[in-house]
Length: 290
Ligand code: SAM
Image (cartoon, rainbow, N blue to C red; front, side, top):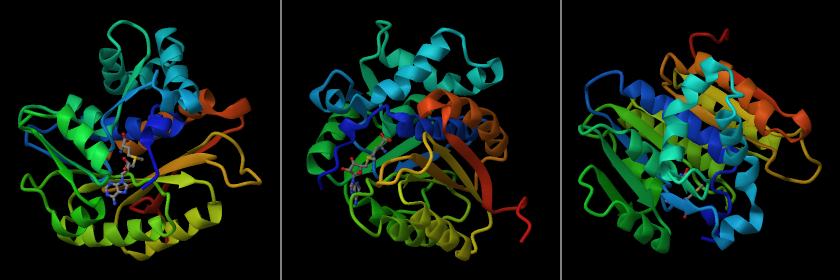
C-alpha cells in the first residue's frame, strides 16, 4: 500500500469528487428520514496543505485554490455558486483564518453535512491512516471508523439499517484490476442494497480502459447509472491523470441538471490552457435510447 492521498488532497480530481459528494448529500437532506454515508476508502479525513507531501506536488494549487479564488472574487455564475456553497462553506470553515492551509477529505465533508439523525461509516485499510482517522472522530457517536478492506463492505455490510444513503467507493487505483473490482463490488452491493446511491470515482488515464469499464457497468443491467467526467487536458501520449470521472448509481433526480451547470464552469476553471472537456451521460437510465 504505497498510495498516500496527502500528495493529492485538494487537486482537481478531489474537487470534482467532493462537489458530487456534497450535491448528493445535500439532496439526501431534503427528507427528515436518517441516512448513512459509507465511505469504503476513506483516507485520513483532514489534510495539511503546508505539509511536505502536499508541498511536493502542489496539486491543490490547480484545484481547490483556483476554485476558492474565483469564488472569493465572485467570479462564478450565481446559480453555480449556489450549488457549490455547501462544499465551499466547509472549506472556509476549515480555514477560518482566511487562508488555505487545510483540506477536508470525504469523511470530514460528509460528517460536516450530516444532521443528528445521520451516520457515517468510514473504512480505511492502511493502518496508519485508519488510526489518524479514528482519532479525528474519537468520541463522535455518529461516526464509526473501521480498519478493514473496504471492498469487503460492499459484499457484507449492506444494507445499512437506515435503508437510505450513499456508498462512496474511492480506491487508489495503484494496482491492476481496480476497474473490474469496482464493477464486481457494485454488482454485489446493489443486490443487497438496490435502493442505495453509489458514487464510484475513477481516473481517466487510459481511455480504452474507461470504455471497457463503462461497457461492463452497462452489462450489469443496473437501471440507473449516470456518468460524469471532467478532463483537464486532451489525451496525453504517456499515461497521465488527464481527468477523472464519477459513476453515480441511483443519482438524485436533480444531479444530472446540476452537473450540466457545474461541469462546464469547473472545466473552464480547472483545465490546462482551457483545453479540457466534460461529459454528463447516462450509461443506463430513462434518458438512454437503447
Ligand atoms: N476518499 C478519500 C477522500 O476523498 O478524501 C480519499 C481516499 S484515497 C483516494 C484512497 C484510500 O484508500 C487511501 O487512504 C488508501 O490507504 C485506502 N485504501 C487502499 N486500499 C484499500 C482497501 N482495500 N480498503 C480500504 N481502504 C483502502
